[in-house]
Image (cartoon, rainbow, N blue to C red; front, side, top):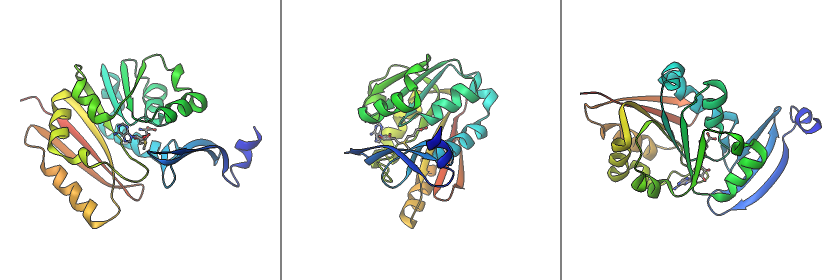
Length: 221
Ligand SMILES: C[S@@+](CC[C@H](N)C(=O)[O-])C[C@H]1O[C@@H](n2cnc3c(N)ncnc32)[C@H](O)[C@@H]1O
């Protein structure tokens, strides 16, 4: 395809929409790969996919394969879902929660998310969803951004406690954060302190420049 070939020399934009949540949503051929970006950052495929893949590697592909129920908060183009299904060959149930209907329409059109059999998408605010769900999960991926901003609720006790409750023993949380300034660096240090001895928390700094990843395991007592 010509656009794909040309994109090794210059990014080729395929579609662009205004968005209340992400300022804009753009699909672009970049270095031979179709990526999804918000106005100021990469959302799916590209560097974001590499970041979450590293997180999944830290948890272990074989271990993830043995899980039954995975929750993804923040779906966008669904690149972490593609890693789970295509690379890890995860066959269990995946639930994706995404606040922005338009981004899911784009994900279906350009990245064929709707062809993934073991995926169910809920168009909802992640905060509302975790209050409502009756399920428990072996892996919860938290990847919520509004362009480059992370909503405050992600770092608050109420949300953290609810996520911990929804996690099965021996299950993992994978939390992707962005750290650009000192305030955010301290915010992350404080976040780590919120988990007691029942959890094993690891922080991976400087994953692709500005991202800091957490893996949190719920220990069996
Ligand atoms: C970085 S993207 C997610 C990328 C995705 N995990 C992947 O692997 O390709 C962040 C997403 O979070 C969504 N988002 C922002 N606030 C949200 C909220 N309160 N509830 C659910 N999704 C939200 C945005 O619309 C955006 O699609």
